[in-house]
Amino acid sequence: MYNAIICRYHEIAIKGNNRSMFETRLVENMYYLLRRLHDIRIARVRGRIWIERKDKNSFTDDQLAIIREELPRAFGLESFSPVIMCERSLAALKTAVNNSCRPYFAAAFTKQPAVSFRIRAKRSDKKFEPDSKGIEIELAAEIARIYDPDSLEVDLENAAITVWCEVRSEFAFVYYEVIRGPGGLPVGSNSPVLALLSGGIDSPVACYQIMKRGCRCDFLTFHSYPYTPQATVDKVRRIAHHLNRFQCPARLFICNLAPLQKLIRDKCNPRFRTILYRRMMFRIAAALAAKHRRAALLTGEAVGQVASQTIANMATIGAAADLLVLRPLVGNDKNETIRAAQRIGTLELSNEPVPDSCTVFAPSNPATAVFPSKIIAEEAKIPEYPDLLQEIIAAIETLTP
Image 1 (tube, rainbow, N blue to C red):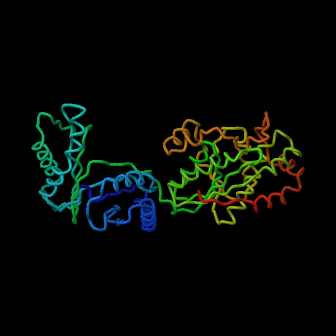
Image 2 (tube, rainbow, N blue to C red; image 1 turned 90 degrees about the vertical axis):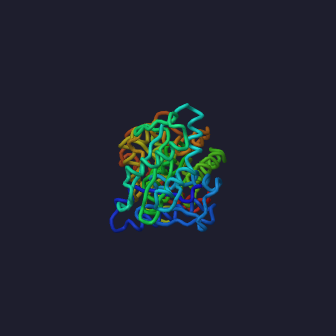
């Protein structure tokens, strides 16, 4: 019975002269997410985005299932609703309600003998008669004609069922659901970034957060073969595959850091190993970002979470890369990030017990406040690292997860 989907955005609506660019990008992303539906048309109409079948027929149950699954991943979308679009007349609205309300009321009556409901009407066309209040009264009376009035309760605040309807200058429509989207801005409306993606909980959430701000993410992960197993890469690949469900598929770059880690282990102060590892990772990431024209690096760091994420150590590590470093989770506590990971579907993947590169040769007593002068002196003990760095960069693998 649903022959259209109305899609609402929020943040895009406050944009100025470039609003059309954000709308266009959102429509492009929606076409990609709904690519399994070959007969749809997505159009912008007066501050809303509409999805219809090209033949104007109603969506099938299978098509609606795909829409419900995919559209909640469309960044920039505030909410959406399957609607019954009809002629702009009171009779057509009554028919639409009569033909569509029964499944909702039937489901509600299985849970309780009396069902509360409300009508919410809106007229974009103020010339339409009756007014919004009159439409609500007429549609409530239509429902009362279908069911025993004694089994119905009108509740304007906390109704079990809400019937929304709107009358526009071109058409009218009725709907029962408001399905939340992720909000934010459409992916591709801001500059692309390169994310340092580990198998932990934090970095996938950071990727999600920056996608929500319109940035497409490529991913760079590090392993330490033969000191870490193939499972380390396989786990990150699954996480990247999941994150790519929110954007057009991006690349996963895979880098073996073990040769540099052995050099640092053999020649540098053990307390500084993790910081030295991270500085090398940032140098590799910055070189890769420059090669592929990524505008910034992205990490899942949060202040104080581990020894390498104190303010002093983050500054020392960040100084190794001559590129903007984005840290969307910098003020999060761990529980906030865990809840976010659960919401976006990466927590279970991240909780798989697989070692990562930073744990290889990890010191038992890492330094918590190392300033650049100290770490530069440590790097001077390994003058061969720039050449080795280039070899490692040249050996990076590229996958599309």
